[in-house]
Length: 482
Image (cartoon, rainbow, N blue to C red):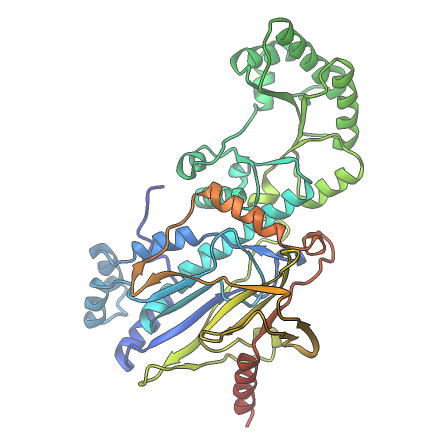
């Protein structure tokens, strides 16, 4: 899992288009936007993740001798083009929304400004990296929200779609708010907490459940969470756990954390019964952890039922985002630089309204309520448009223009959220640690209204267009219909 040259992690048509550009036209500078069209699970927001891996990909972007020899063996590339690839390096600009930031449909997450051959090549890798990690970070954030302040551990490695998905999915889950992961390699690579208990096989390998618990407590007295459902949760598992906890107390052993884990059965019923048994035995601070195919919806239901669970282990449904397995990000041409150095807006038109793109060289301003610090809207505008927050700001829905909101001057603040990452091929951005990104994400979610964070029918955060961008888009649409 050391840093890899992912140059050939691309679709073949990226390379055939590159050769087409090489053979037929000047390598003009263009702008591509990477964005998505809909929040996963019909949620109110998503979470940005994956930028650090994109940075590493761009830094290592070069065609090795072996890469060029392989492409030559395909018999579809000219020697002149292969010679060009042998000296390839990325020379353009990349702007991105930082990891951990809450994001919304249709706004550029990554903007690539580069010669068209370079901009075309990086499409596939950017999409696969950002789509996957945004998806898992968003799913984790929803699960964490459902847990209402209880710790959520990610432990889906064995169910992930391969080592990379398990590794970078764990990283994304920590960004989304999980307190730790079972993935030891992720712990080493990203300096995040690793957590875990034991399996049913541990219990079954001993002559009886009590002996298994006692040996585990002897080995790990500071963090002793016992899995109590191997045989009979309430008649055997919990009583044996209580017996071991009492023996530890009698011996003067006071664990930093201890408790039980439930992995099957009616979690609401069993947790409430177990809580009563633990409390009556004098262990009111014992943690009750739960696992077993959990997701945000089941956790939410268990909370409604009054389950006495204070720690959650979430695996398959998180690491695969099982009920919504794709993020849907796309990468579209937005502008081409003319001979005078001006970016000429380009638009993709479709019968599907949601697939019509926003043209031009754009940036994003996030607008907050000055008094509460809560988010009001995002505004996509052209680079260079300026706003005075002491003046009134009129926002309108670009799809239903009669829906308007006027923010009075002095009542709002604005922040540009696209940041420079590469300038003329040189990296200008240093990624924070994963823990720092996770803290940023927590702070970001504090700026959302509670109505936006709810799991069902969340309030929509509007992503509006500036008047200038809206007018330009309308002109291009009208011109195409002449």
